Length: 303
Image 1 (cartoon, rainbow, N blue to C red):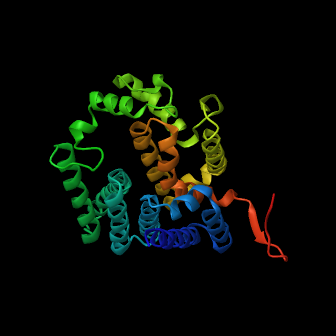
Image 2 (cartoon, rainbow, N blue to C red; image 1 turned 30 degrees about the horizontal axis):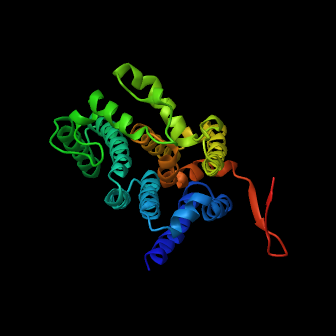
Image 3 (spheres, rainbow, N blue to C red; image 1 turned 30 degrees about the vertical axis):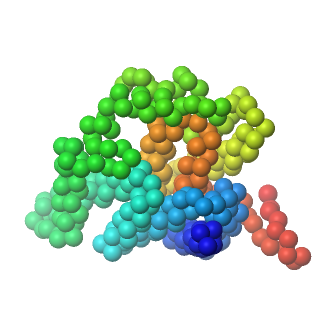
């Protein structure tokens, strides 16, 4: 029964991925995104395993639908839908709140900018004022250590290099561990070790990390992400110009940075990065190859 429920959420994730792509791009690209989401190995795997990944993917996509809708119509309902999605994902893994924080920060900064423009014109927008006030209250409570973010804790514990060092050291272990030199021990190391750990999180394992035959499965999975990232970089100018795609990219990068610190071996990273596969696919959508069904009903790709 649990596997069947997971499979239903997996199918729902494919539909949401297609729906978001339709809002971001067009019907043609949305169909390609739907096929890639349906055939991506790790998404298929975690849709039939009794694990939380499939539920997190579903709620993250629900949140993204709200985020994209908000950028299109600036509707309060879309903002609420986005928060429902992030909260739903956080229920299964506390670190998913990072996406909500990134989105709230963007909304807060946007609201501040709009409020200043309106004040100059002698006007006040109630909706924008509510969003700005909410952002200020949340930021103030977090910076004064009055609230704790799941997985990260309060601001004091999050900014403690000692806690970060302990976390990276504890998680960097086992046959599938990242190199020991990636363990963070000082503030200065954050600037160059976090990017390295982020690369390991998304693209690991590398050939020199292979110690067992089963590790090759992880390397094959990593090659798929390399291809998606290549497509994202190829279309980065277009992504940065589009408000919705830009926010999706910021949310994805926020998750990667946090998990780069919290994860220390590629066995775990393969599972964790599958939570964000849909975000990679959505950002890479424009450059994906064309897929079609042939006359003899066999799936093939045109390269």
